[in-house]
Image (cartoon, rainbow, N blue to C red):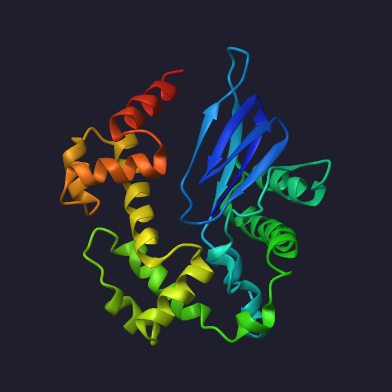
Length: 254
């Protein structure tokens, strides 16, 4: 999961289908497994500066007492629907917690880890109150978050393999039809779309950080047909793999 705070300049921030214009002093939350990217939209030559805190959900859920497990059970599935840019005018508690985290950048871990965890808990409380608490908790508690989380983690670790619906449903201990309904409800996407998103996100990482040929990137990420890979990449990223690689390389040289 990630929280980005824009310190200077202006950003055009894309999360899935949504586009946010961010100004200095604002922050945005990116939950796990969401396709996202940002474009510098600053008018001046100095560009923008930002801080980002990237953390595993276990950083905060691991500190929960057993009786409060339901409070954290949805932490991996906080979607982007309804999320927005946060700023100090409306969200002072969240922004202040972020600034406290960023003040620890140069401190030894032993002197800052507990403080950072506490601030992350504060941020999660704000997000939970606004975007999760209003859900039908009675219905949610009757469902097995742990089993769905297990299948999601399996997909994240084995995204390049030929993963069958039967295997995922067996892991969750339910029928295939029931599993599909559960998975979409809690992850926000059907299982196979979730797999494709994982593959495309890994492809983005390779296109940015390696010189591998696009055909090899496709194969590594689980696509045996490079044409299908190109179409799928275009669907999610709204540009071809080559265009994505060129654009991100150009941004690095600015």
